[in-house]
Length: 341
Image (cartoon, rainbow, N blue to C red; front, side, top):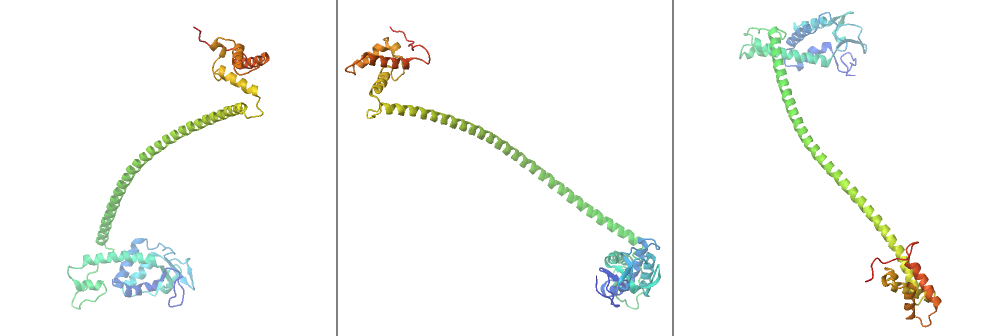
């Protein structure tokens, strides 16, 4: 809602009273108000047929604090109102579908009438330029609200709606439109060139990113293979360490058996292990095949050098134990492939 007028009515937002338009031109417009009113009347004649109703959004009756949009106002009625103002006789009423209504009770959408005034102002200024002789400042001042000397003839008035003015205005608008179109075309071409350049740059960046992606994939594959090899190596190493631990346990057990100060280790067992190691080079060769002498005989000779009172049963025990050690799994005694010379 806007402020109140003389009758204390609060006007709808963005509206102005019809009878307040002309006085506003007197104090706030550079053109002569009567000329401006005449130009506006001429412009309204070209907008629509005189009997066509103006949209209630643009012009409506406003009484008792509310708009009555059922009452219709035609373009012809508005034209007559501003023609009267242009002739110096502002009307107090305006014709409507309900008869004559005071202009004080008619409200107009401010932006709509201001857009029309801007258009007719441009027309009027152009018309003054056509009608005014060059350097005739005195007559020009009349059109713009001034007063000319009494000795000057009244200026010839050319309406802003005259064909020559409208054609000139159309040509001017066409030139402005062409300039605007040219500017837009230049902007479009510049924008297209910029987009093409950006497209080239993006393609180059895409190629770089593809190369980086390919390199990354190759590096990832190499890393996967290396990781797989490393895992396999670690597994093999782990298995090897486990085997070594198992063998070490056997060696440690044998070392414990061979320890002389071990009171729980049988002396004969230590002697038997020592015999086996010496006759077979730590179980690396077949003693019988290597020397061509029976195992019992080799055991006997070895024991005779180390045991004072050698018993036949002891020789048999050693020979039996070493025979078992010298055999293959479930097979016959090993034979050295080398022939004796």
